[in-house]
Length: 269
Image (cartoon, rainbow, N blue to C red):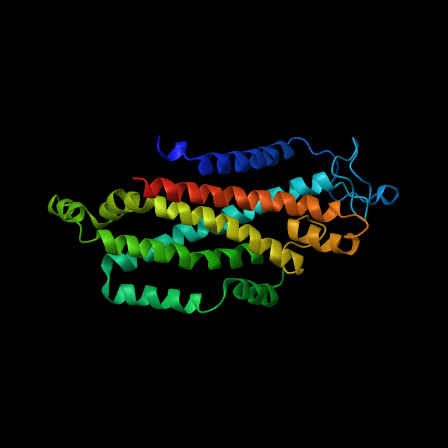
């Protein structure tokens, strides 16, 4: 842990993500304005004390909408990455530990899903089930499954014939105990790296879907929707593009730095 938290990238990534998450927590108790409140008299206002990030083409406070977008991004990233971590890891673990027909079934399912580009699968589900929060979470969760399944499967293939597992079997340990108390802890770093990257990927994919109108629906705010609405004002009010793009990039960079820091810590062991 001392080596891990001495990595500059990890510290910087955690600092960025913690700061943005703190803004999300504060937004539940204090919101400067109603993020959906329209004020035609104040539309396209520049930065000021009253509106620190200005207002959009409908007079809505940009800072308030950025806070709501951060909420949605954290929720989408957490839901998609956590679903993939739990179910993808369990599927990969079963395939890697038991082998045989179980491994063949898991491998074929992973191969079939990975044959479709993740964003294409998300677009298909959004078109088939209709855009919205639930469909977006479902699509991004399915996108995350193969990553975790492959990491868990390779880890279990590496450890299932190790002396540690043979010793536990000789002691009479159950299959579940061996899997959850002895093999999973040994691949936890790889899973955490994948979790961090999946978090960032889910956020980017949600923004892309919302930009195309297939993700979060109005009047709810999201970074992709804010960028889509602001593109008509890119020359007259460029800050409407810069502010959500900067915060979105900062969020993704934070999780990417965490992933790089965890990888560097693992390699230094």
